[in-house]
Image (cartoon, one colour):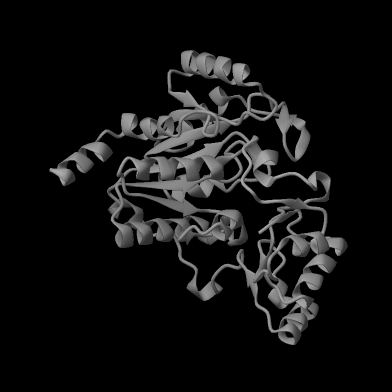
Length: 328
């Protein structure tokens, strides 16, 4: 396993992310990546998420080159490569598979909102944010693992292509679905997870931000998933929206007010994306936000994961009470 990123070639992927090496090398190109591998990998994953959702000419050539070397493709773009004549021909010629993970089910099979979400009796927690690409999926993943470590049956619902690629058993790429069906598809996914897994709590990965002018998927998460609680992710050092440098970041206060006005839910905690911050600055931010917002605050990556789980248990003590009853 390796990562291709010419701008960070030679580094360890974990070190590049959070200064914790994980043994996954970053390579400059496909040739270098294959030289690092013991054998040709089964799949080449296109993990970039450009705002256009489309392959550039250079990226297209890398993907075709990988197929020629015997690798299937995992494609998270809005551009479905199985529908592309050149990729379809390459797939047949080289005997490899293309997985278009953002492709929704056939329109005749898409589900409208039905109200069945009311049958889900366990708490539903959405991890939303003040911007896109701010760490919502990471926080949701860490939170789910922390709850499981306490013996709580937590199920994660993925709502984007990366979560699905990473193996979320229950997931739907909401931004690829016609808006009329988004709430219904999320509702059906949550209900399915509840009926199959009998969880103590369901964690729903967020997308974009409710205040974001371009990435509006949070509206469907709040309406279709009807979360009982929200954990909000914020990057204090980020001055502008990541894809829109002229638009200033919202404050946690404004986003919390918007969320709680838009939906019948409550924000139960704030998590910090520490990009561009020292550890001392993270500590200061935690103290100040807890004082100003009156809710628990933590950093999912630089602080103990159990602090995330404690946010949920504090807001919904029945989750842990049910565990105690089950043990007894």
